[in-house]
Image (cartoon, rainbow, N blue to C red):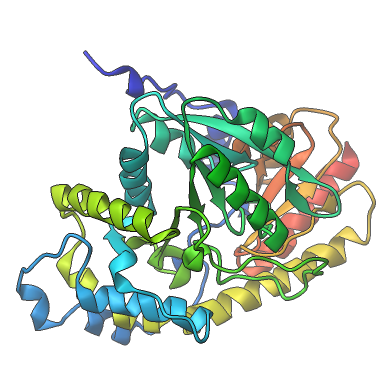
Length: 395
């Protein structure tokens, strides 16, 4: 009765079962995987946000498949502020109901059923589901760690096949926190041109650079101004404004003019088929984007303080270390690979009440990795890390 594309394994895995048991027991839990800024104690200008949604103009319905011009103007200004002196054309923007819909649009634009998109691993696990329900096959290539994360271009070249249509990257990556460097971007452009591939770049964490990161090479900025290869940048209010409940994202196209023009015409038809994005939210977008500095400053302060606390505790022992972070709000911990990461995560839950994500959730190639969120409220993060280190020290 049901399609093969929805034949997922829907039963709980061992980690989820353990987490449910601990929560039902009523024992204290230290969840250091927080990803929702709305639950992390940040202060929002509630009046300004709600007033933006009360505009009477939202009662009129005059849809534009690409998104209302005023909303697209606000996004264009966002990119121009990040790139002083540059002009961004609002006609290169398509508004969507969040980045998940944006991926759906792009998979439909670029792929026939069974075509392939290359994705960097480690990476965000949601991509597998987004691709499967669009009949697209994800094929991995690898990031390698050597005093910092970088693309394994040999792995990338080996992954390219006759049905490859695009390369998907997150910049900075979730969860590794690495930005692409300028020379990596140049190599990527060359690969895309050689094989006629599009580049899809998820930049939802772009505004969250780590000021403590040591720069050895020049990092690449936003790909929204790339003219070298057909590129689609994804972003949205969820991370930029810390408003995940405001389901508004966008696709920003760049690259050779003729290819961008053709892509935008096709994307407009796809968007017009759904017309899914809320009109009131589009009218509110300029005001909601205008609130971003308030929440971003709090998030940067939190992640910086938690990173400092993490490093302070790590210096007091030798079993656990962290990998370099340049952006985003996650940290990858290197732990002794004496048992599978999932078993370690379950042991942390059962013995210490600490919630972490095992590395295999993000497709790490080997055991010995845990992922924690620097977004977590400070006291909970401090105690959670203390308990994690105690548990690992006890073996």
